[in-house]
Image 1 (spheres, rainbow, N blue to C red):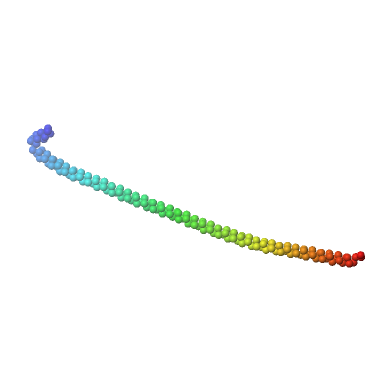
Image 2 (cartoon, rainbow, N blue to C red):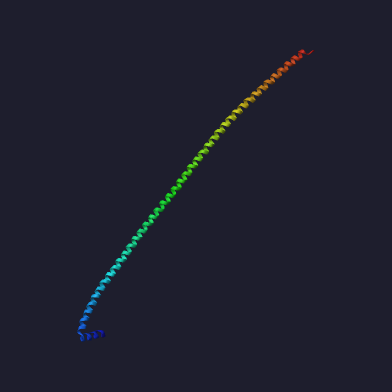
Length: 164
């Protein structure tokens, strides 16, 4: 209240000061309006900036998700290629082992054939040996019979030439 009284007293003393004061008040009101408008603009810019920040963060999050998805897909692709390379390596080893197995089976088959052939030859030789043994026995029996006949003939001859 005291300020208002001082202002009224000063206005009465100097009228040009009153005009200046009114001009000053008008300028102050205009500045207030201007500041208020600028504050509103600043507030709007701040809100827009926050919204833009949020949009950027959302887009960044989406991009990050896409990057992680791509990385997962790429990692899966690399794992697939690694598995396929190992699979091909295993197939090559299997093919090599199959060749070795076939070679061993072939060698075993040849050995079996040789063994069967050797057994056949052995059986044939045994059969020939048995035939030869039988033939020798027959010859021995025949020789024995011939020996007895010879001895009998010799004994007969000796008895004939012997004086009685």
